[in-house]
Image (cartoon, rainbow, N blue to C red; front, side, top):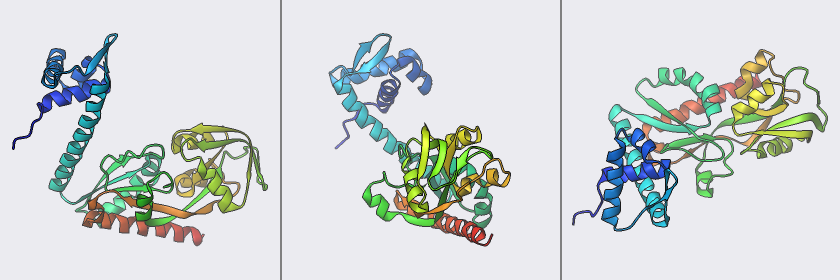
Length: 298
């Protein structure tokens, strides 16, 4: 029995116009004229026999029927896009799609990738950025994270340990700090969406923090930049501030305390057990373990 579906071009026009709340912006994104997108929206509403939009000034606003359809169409297009990308990846050769924080990617993973490609010249790595606030893994096979408290219990149980993590307060040399305990600082810098890091550090180190005020930022690299600007004391993972500590741009007045859960990879697709994914995981464990051994030997 044939599928009863509206034209895919009309669904794409509808999803773009609904998401962008503008026919003009949708036409620019799709590379179509304003008139062509408007015709696709009219066609879809005629096929449905109901209106999907209400006028909102010069823009568009979905009515309840339109919003219900938008959710379904967006989910379907997301699935189609991920399936198509997976097909392209497989056609180009063995690959693994990894999601991680932008700070970890920039400061550790990408600088270490030459070693991965030397060890596995036939494999490819695709990166996506995710965050503690929103698990935007975009169809990733693996997501790398230390804070997995917001993940579903089933995902937490599947987490694959990769290596240790150690966090510590860092600040400019000369920033007023009384090591304590308690650690007394004028300003504590916290991540907006992983604020439990300070609590975890206090528990791991046995040192409480007494701060007159707190500044919050939505990304780890912004917390680090705030510390480098002298705005306060930030809590950072040791491997992410190696260069700043070596150059004495930052100091760690209390050292670093290991977090018990460590860094782990959470499998998100069947391809997490592929040859490429297993090779990447083995390489990660080796690299992180080598660093940890090096620190112990210092």
